[in-house]
Image (cartoon, rainbow, N blue to C red):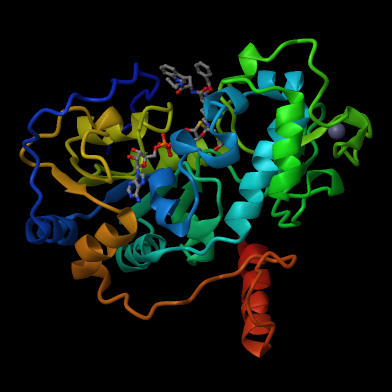
Length: 355
Ligand code: BJW
Ligand code: ZN
């Protein structure tokens, strides 16, 4: 039995583009995957990139002048809650209108193929796409919670699985009005440079308030910098890690620079696990550090690479369309026929069964 190692360690910085010793052989990887009894995956925003969602550090468009990490803090919310809400309302809207890609489906299939003791997926993503790809809930731990949880900034009130779009009338996502609001509020490179004298982006009384305490502002239920990750989730992850050695650790579409999430790759490596990195950019090794000859590096789009490399274990994924849709009218631009209603029934069951 292994014991969970402390994961609060200094993050390594991105590696220079030196030669990697890691293998790029799909067949060798598949042999290792097949023989691995316990596989851990750490997923990041790159997994959802080909579903059309911007990565955390790659936000462009109307958010190009803002540093995402400066908006993802309680201090930013205190300073200008309307600006932070617009950022998250925009991302809710985008996520609700996106679809899971073959990478999400491949991981969900791997979870079913390996079983609960054989595979655990730690996701830093808040977009709900793995859930909609029907990833077994017990094998999916949401380290940074969900865009669809709403909680109170002042009291313990929390509402889970709120898929309303807009989440509040003042947060209607229409690009023209957001752009106008952003330019009226400020044009900061980061929120910290915004002048204290600027008016709030949205007046406080127009923002959603807590139905429990009546006075607190509601906020997105995601985990911001400086906040603790969900205790129960961490406990479940540590229990799984503590039940045996990890043979293989997949690091998928993440810079692996945010802790404690990135620390799990180091824990797995210290326990002797091989590392397999899947990333568009082969320099993004983050917590994986320098890869060894026993490790693997697959450069490319996770949506394309994952079905290829997991194929030997999960089988053919072509034609797989079993999306679990969101509730509350989240799906748009598609027919409203019987199939859609059946899909909605599935989703009600899915989310009713989720913890
Ligand atoms: C593709 C692709 C394609 C593109 N296919 N690939 C130890 C040391 C130092 C600091 C700390 C420490 N422990 C804790 C800290 C402080 C802090 C931290 O880690 N800071 C670092 C910046 C150093 N951590 C915390 O504050 C955490 N809390 C905590 O530990 O509490 C206790 C504590 C507090 C303070 C001090 C000590 C202890 C909380 C962290 C919560 C982070 N939450 C965020 C925001 C969530 C809401 C939101 O999304 O807005 O989570 S930050 C942000 O980063 C988000 C992401 O989940 C996370 C990871 O980002 P990710 O997924 O890697 O995305 P990107 O954009 O960075 O990378 C995308 C990758 O995909 C790239 O590599 C591309 O190349 C690739 N890619 N397209 C494959 N198609
Ligand atoms: Zn409250």
